[in-house]
Image: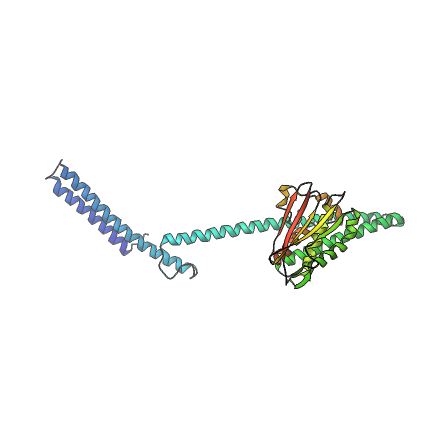
Length: 342
């Protein structure tokens, strides 16, 4: 059953009266001015007056309807949704559109996060599967009698040890990148000599470099370069970058350089090699977790695939960025900046 409101009754009566008045005027003048131009003019005038009255009534009707609907919405939704100042349905519709847009954006973000979660779990599973399967195979061989052969036993135990080390490296890297992303690692800033730190990392990776006859070289403008940063984390950045350079550099006449330049209040650090380089289509992805330029070589070397992602997060924690430049088959250069201290 339709509920009649006073406004609806007044509107109906007013429209009825208007139409009756138009009909009365038309009948009154029709017999005197039938067929004349004045007759047509009167008809046009009557229609125009009818239009004005109808338009005014509809405007009043819709304004009243807007107020009622906004009142209903304000009682339905939280108080912050409808402001104290009167608004129109059009403005209310725009608010709904904004909310819908925000909701769509949140849904899209959630879908991307779900996709990332699936890829992340898949990558972790894939990285751990290789060393675990290797361990399983070696253990089964030893259990089937291989342990009695000292050569086989020692060789397989050594391989098992390397596979365990690789699993530990992956787990440690996963733990570090999770803490960096969640902000659980707080930086411990200190003043230290960047030149000395670079030489320490050179010594740390010297044995690996000797295996491929690679040469480390430091180019620096002065004997000491004092910077202000987290020494431990910057050491990790240099280790990851230089270890990558060792793994990917040219196996003949391998050259790995660290160049330090001073610009204003910053030290610009460039880590470069003359290795295989990176293809242009891969440059945009090298800081992604588990992304490998050469998956076969990385797995052979036992890397976790998280080294450059960790580097990126450490630099972001310092409110700095790291850039990469590379020419395929010629070499790669990573560039980052650190704040100088007096």
